[in-house]
Length: 394
Image (spheres, rainbow, N blue to C red):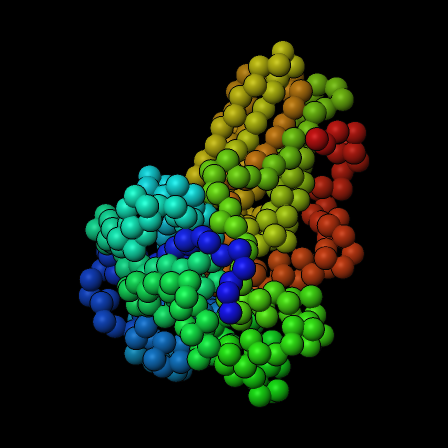
């Protein structure tokens, strides 16, 4: 079967057991041992674990209590998100220097579109040399898959782990996919996997031979996407990553103001709104910018890099601190703005080494209410102030 429209060369790169690998850089005694990153209390959950721990059945998002029971000799480390963010940005910087088009898909994985480079360098050789440079300059193990699209490249990376490389040429895509478990298809979650297995569908080949209309009836609108992936078809482009990719909110006041309590409440409202937007779109930010424009149109901005997050309570102190540093002139303010940038895909699982999974559960509960009843259905009392209603948001 020919793969329509697939004339691209896509590389998927994934840092192996990223959190654990970063910890091992500063503590080599952890090498070869079962290591779990997560909350130190029994109420926490697993944010990441080593391959040695996985052999005992430990996996990400598992309750820490269960992980300790499965692997009682594991070394448990709370984790350092600031350190992980720093190494993630280091890898991105190396890729940015060499790749013509790249997408930072999450804190530990990237897609690269190197279509056409075969004529000059050779895709396999170029990808290998880039991977070796990352390993050499960061000390982190990283695996890569090279194929015709995102789906096949990502699956290839999974099979190349740990710390390996795998190329799947165009003509070998279908033979490569056929014997694999349907669980290897990106986007198939536990519920879909169990449903398909209950129907006797275990391999990608079996799913591939099903009529697409049947798969769509069975799995809904996502069914056709999954069927296409089973057939090696994925036209999703590599979205060029830019540090300018951001979300933000600005407010121009009807009357210039020096009402700082009101402005602080407005900043809270903006953080709450933008953080909810991040979580809704499954994004994380690592850069916060605050903007102040005075009555004389003099404009100042200040930004600060932070560990990746999408939580209000992590972002609000940074926003308020930046505003306090910016507002030194005690002049009337015309405009105030907040922007979150350096966005990557990801959910807040990377904060699972917090000892309070209740915090994550609380955000999830509030977000479910917002999805059902609207963004303002759950909000902090300070954002309900009538004083905020006359401010015009842009």
